Image (cartoon, rainbow, N blue to C red; front, side):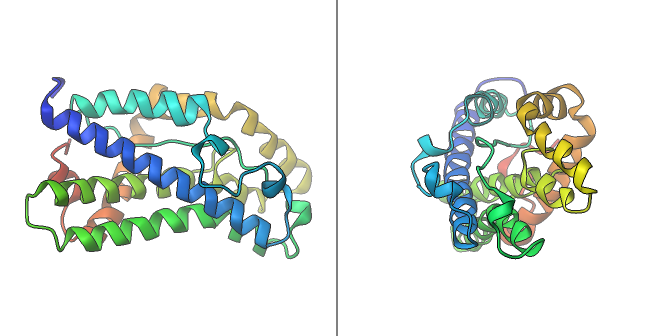
Length: 225
């Protein structure tokens, strides 16, 4: 623990690739779903695209994954996470509320969950202990972490959009407007008071991944703490 190794660098690279693919597909799915439900905003903002430039946010998509990759390189078990620029979805355009807001918010986590299932199923076919099998487990675990992370009730994330539906209208707007402080809140949640949050994220993401893979994902990866 705490030392750079060839295995650690490999795990770090595999985690970053999984984050990149998972974020690209989840953001495309969110924008596409919102547009299909009647909101023209994602199209007008150029978000219905598989180009990372459309969703990349320097802190959430660059610095946070970069810091986590360093920790993974030294095999310190920190749950992978990332977020994009807050999606330009205008609920006033959505035809049926609250159903459409839930559908648009759930699109990203559903895509990441689908990636977990696909990677987990493929890992069962890979030779036990192979590099390919390890890469698939890392991919499944990382996308499982994205599912859980984005369902947290932090303004700017998918979970907060669904929680906002339960709030009175005046409180709802205040709550949503806190998404401008998303970088600060993620910094606090992950790095300053991260003990409980990271333990929770790891436990749930690990359970999801292990169900898909058929083995304890963190033990397979070799970063179980």
